[in-house]
Image (cartoon, rainbow, N blue to C red; front, side, top):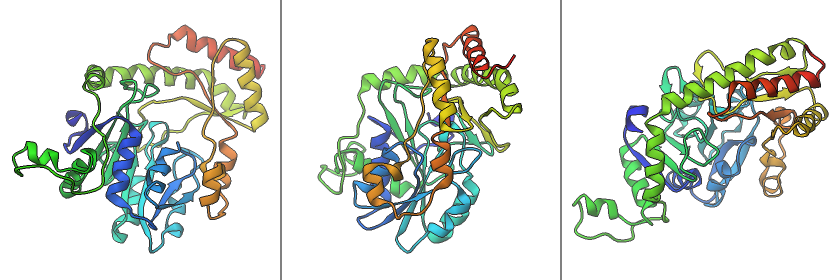
Length: 336
């Protein structure tokens, strides 16, 4: 992992949720505010709200579905302590613009890189551009051990605090290094140390990061080539990867013209034995999120989440299976 990211200060955890909770302990206290996209998985937010922080939901970009950096400045207030940059699908947020807002104000930038290992932004590996980064090794991710995660902390002082949070709030790691003669309870924390068996399983996959990424890229590119005719005809929109970004190729999705088209295509594919899915239910419209939301309109989030459909995407997907999925989609639109 250090070789891939080109840096140390990495702690493995039982999940990305655990990594995000450590990131929250490093950045917020009760009453603080965190700027987050509503279009993300719940733990991108709940890790902070569990500590008493308030989410300030931000809309997303039309192209990448990442947090819209042009909307962040207006959300910054005196209690803002962190911005969570979720790299959706393994494509980077506009990190330079986000840091230009955050750094002068002393706001921490937390990369939610759950889907982004092997992605890059301006030739920098994702997970090394923010102050803190969190990775997932859940079974749905490109590299997995069933359930696992990691937190990367740039600042050495914060990293030592992260060690304490990971070890039940004790200075146990300092004890093992011979820096103290006994360890004791010194801060907040929980049991965030992963199973050695899980890490052994993960280790073998991390030895093949480039190979796995190349296979996923070939599937992504095959989908894109085969379905470009539908984009040209105005039926769908394909994923967009900005020039400054290198994707991890975590997923391949389509954006349909409306929810009715999305649901119709999903049923059509299901009838042919092809499993597809959609996500996320925007957090600002969830039962808990709606109570925390300030009522600000998030029109791009509200529209795009109902148009998105994820296609099958995994390294062992054969070319003929990709072709079958594409042909079935073309049939739905009566395209040649």
